[in-house]
Length: 125
Image (tube, rainbow, N blue to C red; front, side, top):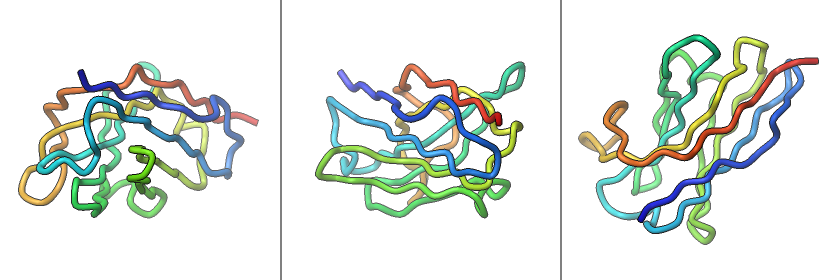
């Protein structure tokens, strides 16, 4: 059974950097043809794919967030991480880490087969 668990601060101040880590068990983040993504859901809004890192280690980003987002991995710990810079209250959301098959070389943006429980991150002074 694949399990994903998000961890990180639940409160971030405006203009700071939001940092989350996803710890994966039951699968390796280097397993071929899978990618590991971050998805968020602001209160009262829909799901938004932010970006992901594929099994081969290349990261892909949503164009709307690319300038502020960085996704990396630590294969020794089987973890991948999200950093979102220059946050504003509009970045308040539940953040999920997920797994999906790759499409071509990159991560699928839909059809995730495993999700973490999600973690609420609020941006407020």
